[in-house]
Amino acid sequence: MTLAHLIQTEKKENKAFHVKGVIETALDKGDNFALWRLPNETAQQLILAKSIKTLSQEDALEELPEGFMITPFNAVTRSFIPVDYFFQFNKGLLQPPQSTKETDAHNWLHQQQLSSSGNLSFHIQKSKAPFAADTNTFKELVRKGVEHIEAGAFEKVVPSRTRNIPNRFDVLDAFEKLCTRYPTAMVSLISTTEHGTWLGATPEILVSIEGNTIFKTVALAGTKAWHEGIDLKNVAWTQKEIEEQALVERYIISCLKKIRLREYEEQGPKTIVAGNLMHLKSTFTVDMQASNFSQLGSTMLNLLHPTSAVCGMPKEPALDFLQQHEGYDRELYSGYLGPVNIHGNTNLFVNLRCLQLKKEEAILYAGAGVTVDSDPQKEWEETEMKMKTLESVIQ
Image 1 (spheres, rainbow, N blue to C red):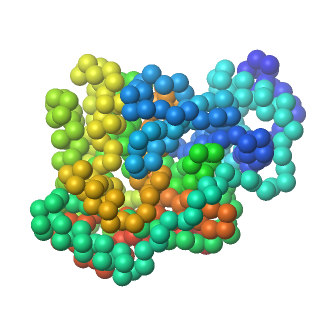
Image 2: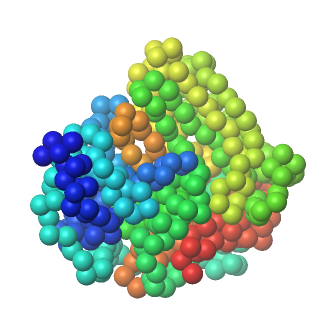
Image 3: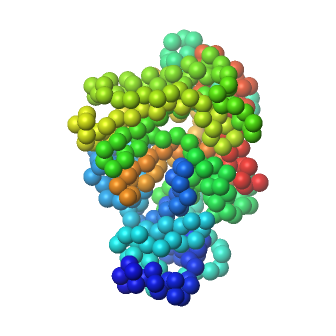
């Protein structure tokens, strides 16, 4: 069918395709999917794919087809979900096609016998749940981090931990609630044969490329609880929080210096709200055409990850400390994910405020930035606040 004919047919037949039925049908076929909602947008976008591709660090973002990228914290390789079928939804309802690719997807959908049992067979990794540090264990990890900082090993490190909760919630319902409650976050739900199923609502852009012309990244750090009525202009940040965010800024600037790029605009830091939390945020913007750097996104992606906001600074000794003392594999937590070359734009986010789905439980992840002034009890409390982003919509 043509685009116009398809739209008229759907209106005439009054067919209301729901995201749940489309995803259930894809999972019944063993397909992979990525469902997401970008910050400050209402459209929810969905990619279905029979298989996922493995990419190396040398594969340039700018040369990839449309798809969705998934990369673990220890980014040896990257996974890529290509667009076999692409759909857009609003509040769970399928929207009319806006391109030839979407028209082809709608035509395919009309030919399917949609699953309707309501039981979604998400891809689940069979590995055991990671080690979950209790309060004393995590506080001891923070103390070790401070000792290493005082000894001059590094300036900052970002230890993390996990917590297991029962898997007794509707994952798609949780996705919808996250979209409603956190309009400025990148909300995502992915399920693949390689990585299993992950749900998240992250505030942190790693690399954004608009129309192959504008590059952006952000420095996001410092954490305080937010509640209705707080005047963001009058929020008082401690020296520890200001220094923590400044380290992330300096890290980004050091990456720009490595490629001798001086033509960038920096805005901030300013206080922003991300769900139930506040952070300090600075935005870095580069005109890729003016700077004559057509593959800036790919270059900076390889330099930035993992940033000092999720690893530490300097990167190498902080990463070595985490690998020795953290006690588990982060997998996709604090890696990055997002749409690539969809509608001409790429938006990769650090995978924070996330959970991994297991058969009987879900695993929450959170970390805290540790500097020389860190208090172990406060860092524990910060991870608790971050986990509430998802807990609040599931319980």
